[in-house]
Image 1 (cartoon, rainbow, N blue to C red):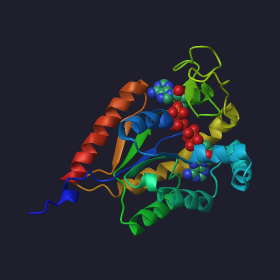
Image 2 (cartoon, rainbow, N blue to C red):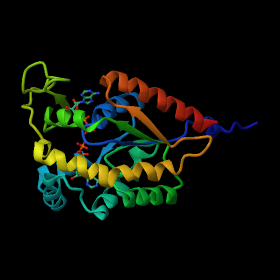
Image 3 (tube, helix red, strand yellow):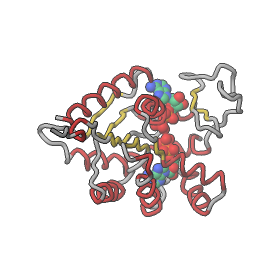
Image 4 (cartoon, helix red, strand yellow):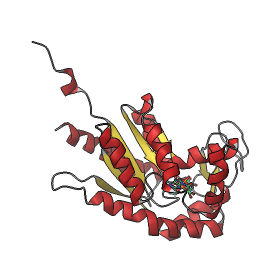
Length: 238
Ligand code: ADP
Ligand code: ADP
């Protein structure tokens, strides 16, 4: 008798990471990518690469990013919709920094539904504003690889240079105090309603939205996220 192989195939793992700037989305995503070998799609990274290359999108994006404002929805929606259609995202994806507004969430929903897909979980990393200001003002990045450090919480072995390739670390233009304040405001005004949008899709048997305490050590936060992903995967196969 033929065996129905698809019944044993793990479902797609389509994850969205939501959280204020500095919550640790990038830090956690780099751990998830290693364990689940899924593409990590960060809108911020894509935009910064465009700024660096001086593309038309990059020139436009820089104006908004320097002020800590969000780009217009249509610009990022098209970018992400196309990205999710690439072959490497067939088995799943980890989305960071998208959706950041309710219209973006609606567009993502529509795009996934058209392709017969759905989100597995929306992971919300919660950190209070006071901690975020300290995290963002102490963040340093490798401009080539995007690898992130923190001057106090995750310092490089030698001050100011990347542990792996020795590149000089920089502070992001939008991690300056005046921009940080606006980014937090934008998060509370425009992005936190996205959590409500997804919470309305929670059912009695399955919660789409999973909240994580992001104030603990990065490794501990990651242990929670990993356990959670294992649970939602299991629930998906039932
Ligand atoms: P962080 O990781 O600190 O939250 P990101 O790198 O995700 O910051 O985003 C940096 C900037 O890129 C944002 O402040 C905004 O200007 C722009 N951006 C990122 N994602 C989006 C999005 N989904 N919609 C509009 N603009 C975005
Ligand atoms: P996001 O992508 O959400 O903007 P990042 O992952 O870039 O956030 O983290 C922001 C800063 O905070 C970085 O400098 C990072 O090293 C630091 N950081 C991340 N997670 C933690 C944590 N759990 N505790 C303390 N600092 C953290």
